[in-house]
Image 1 (cartoon, rainbow, N blue to C red):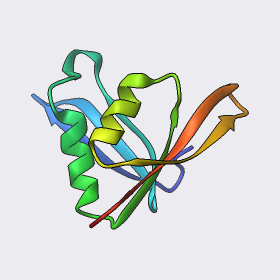
Image 2: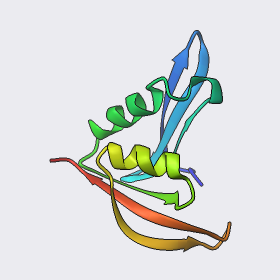
Image 3: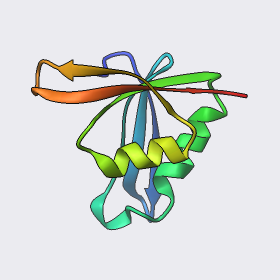
Image 4: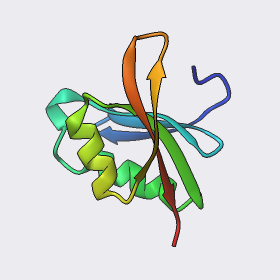
Amino acid sequence: MMLQAEVYVYEDDKMIQGFVGLSNEYMEGIFVSDEMQSCGIGKLLLDYIKNKKVRLRLNVYQKNARALSFYQREGFDIQCEGFDDATGEKEYTMLWQQK
């Protein structure tokens, strides 16, 4: 839940095509519209928040291979495994730190 989150939006032709939500250093989620995926929007949003923070944390479902690969490519490391009680899914906690 993003009650007190920072939200950054990517617009294209006055349409929201992606956004990222942060609670302090925790990345609540990054979302890109289906038709705009693999166009660099996720990387653009992530690079933007990396310039604002020295460290970012997130959780990603283990079965989400595409997201896991994206985050690892962008310098996130797996810190631990966990379990999302709300969904019953196994997940990883990942961390990125500015060098």
